[in-house]
Length: 311
Image (cartoon, rainbow, N blue to C red; front, side, top):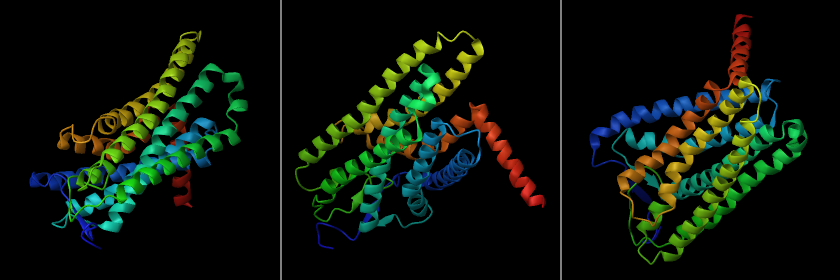
């Protein structure tokens, strides 16, 4: 590597608070373990339980798989750095992490918007739900989410990778993310910052607008349901999705929709860790604890596992 592109980066994290390394290591390890167990369980029950074959669970499976990949992109490296004195990541590893992390983050933005559209059809057009949201449309919608995230990552990450760093190796973060890499550049980054802000605004506000419009119609439809049990079921299903949206979009809006460097960096780190570590862990529990169908499917899966062990 030449001076503009170092062989490795030093990830600062919270190194000015060294006493945090061990507690954070165990917090991230616990969160990552729960993320793996929770999301794998959601994928298994959605795939193998005949009661969970609706489009809602197709998209929930996509979200669970996405969260598994999302956390695996960053958490193992963070655990390695927190568990010892070595805070480095190779240049190639850093660039790969930035590409994949941005791809999956953008994909989740779009997917959450699509899931709101699915909830709108389920609540507002229940008799035509299975006809409108057929398997072909679900595949097209999920493919749109994954491909739009990939296209945006290829654009943004490639623009960022080309920035000369002039020997700068210290990255003030836990992992390689585009805003941090842009701030390391030793040239004018106005184009990169504007591109990131404009595309982030479109990718965040576009799906968020879809979510808000969908739920305005859903709220109107829910209040017209005659039975209290029916209203409660619709509310529980939709409130789970709204909670996931809030946990993911809140930090993302603060980090990506303001000029780089305007927010306190320690707060940016905490918010980034929240949506890339805590939210993927919380998602399966939010959906299962408020969904009797998923709880029932998990119980049936556990019974099958127990019966296989007893044979």
